[in-house]
Length: 116
Image (cartoon, rainbow, N blue to C red; front, top):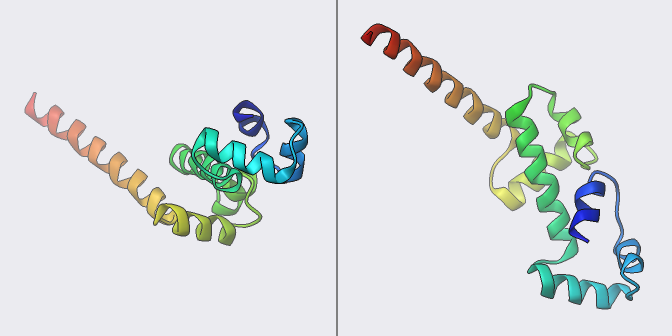
């Protein structure tokens, strides 16, 4: 199931669809999934989407709306609200951290050149 979710997390998935893959009723699937992975399917999927969105925000300069749609969120505001709710951070904060890290690296390199 984890592999299936990792391959399909960017599209809309229903509990009924996931339950059918395991030959379970939706209720039994939710209970079994939660017991096995420690969180409900919806939360697991949101976390998977957020992990990949954060990585894309750090590794690219794509617009926020494009990052959102590529990672299964309906809009930039949907991504922002999910990140705020579940990660207590916003996409702009992640990009700002990326810029701060890059600036720090460049300053260290400059200092090393001066020290030589």
